[in-house]
Figure 1 (cartoon, rainbow, N blue to C red):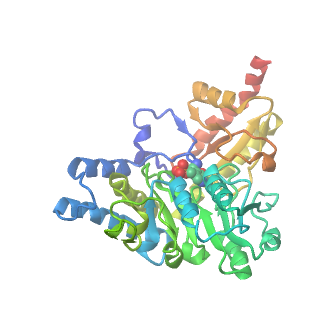
Figure 2: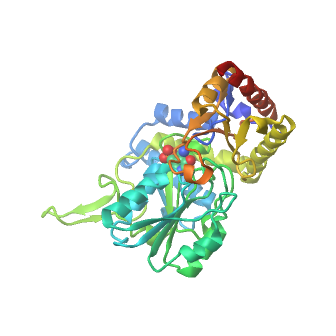
Figure 3: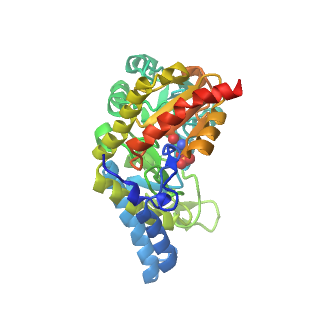
Length: 408
Ligand code: PMP
């Protein structure tokens, strides 16, 4: 197994820390940090200020990042890439942008496992126009039940929005097949994929899968905070109402202060000064992932999960720990130590073992309907992790048993 730690300055002064929270945000690459710093140190001008060379350089950085992003997800055109501040912004832009297209009594289909960022914007949209939200049925393995979905689709269905990988149970949906089912029923139904948990881990090919929209954040792919993307098929994207009106996206405002005209895509949906230093980091994030290869990244991460699974069995951890998703195809482990609050376990792992994991609802507020509990502990792996860390994790988890003895 390759060692990727050298790419992450996080470990430089704290090699003892075991970072198992890549689902919340992945560690930041040295090259990403350097690119951000370089822009801030040596340029720092506004990419709208193309009147002078430095401004033009900044503009070129965005152009470059947009093209790399287009290639990364295999979009047909660079102007189908809208830079946002992250997944949350992207989905709000989409839901808000569809306000004039969605009508009263139309139906929006989602699953109960969605992150709040892929639920609340749709609920808000539905509530504001009297549309309805419907829950898509799930299989035992937490993936979307395609047969049930076929029966749930109707003439009223306007949008189906689901995660490619859920940030809690980590189930990986077959995006291409699900989209085929939807499009065969009615090609006009809009398919949106929340790719926040799949983007840096596996291939996300928007042309092959034929989805209409996709959202994600670059901080989940070893990249910078504060920048994300909304991909959309050109004709659909072009129909969206902007979420932000401002500089950089308007062509003309008439004297009557009523009429105006907007720039074309992508500027039309990118009002205001973009997070240009972060976008400089995006370039390095994509280049790094391309240089390793998504296949190799996926293999590394799933090998860690398989190894964890074997060790759980060998050490009979099932006796005092409930694991919810050892078989799902992503590097996310969701579990609870029987009878103990998840937050007590996360503190214990942090304090005693320097293991950083999450506990709680993990922003999936309707998960109870699926796994029967509102809160759980999530450990998530990235390429920065290795088997030795899993061994230490297993040792620590063994001791959550004695932790119970101390408590009771
Ligand atoms: N959707 C999913 C599936 C996620 O995992 C996350 C991040 N936890 C988000 C949306 C929201 O991402 P952000 O906070 O970067 O906007």
